[in-house]
Image (cartoon, rainbow, N blue to C red; front, side, top):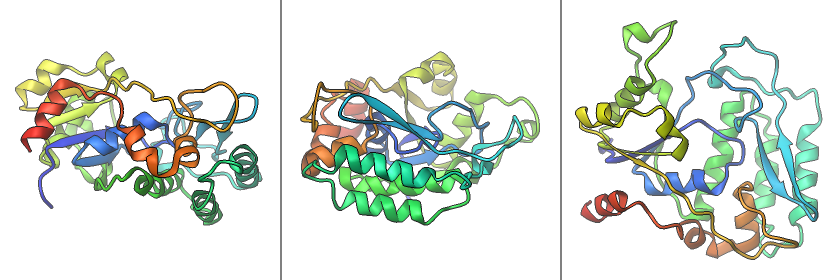
Length: 250
């Protein structure tokens, strides 16, 4: 496996927004962080789509689980007919979009496959969308990286865990989300030979099917509305200067 220089590490999300895919597009390797605690009422099992009147939530119901269950252990609840509701909501909202197909049929196929784990569903849908954005970044899972002995079964050091993941994949630049600035110790990463660059994604505007433009919808909104223009629109946000320099030197 060739070493990755730029790495992005994110928890798996259901039908992610554009900023998620921008991080994937900028990275040499993308890591699904699957061995951290699952958070309820979060983006792990839901996202938004634009309707004729407003945004609505599409939520994947999950089975009851221990409070500290990891993302990779969360199972989907199929006792509810949520797949039909999601597909019907997407169809009603986007059927008149110029690029509704073939993505809708592909989404339908993935949902009908009914994977047991939420992790599997999220990763399959994310990978399904990647070609629509001309993204070929290889992906891995954080659970592939052995944990330090002191990290088993107790409180763990978030910064050290991410540093260990970067080292495991040979990365020397971490491209992280803006909210990560709340806990990332930049000096500590620098001492480990890893530069940290925080995303400052400026959400693009484009022609949506109807009504006032709404930002921060699932990325399927951009694909179904713009089709082959989606890769350029996704990447239209100015890249941080240090990231530009690094990419130019590789």
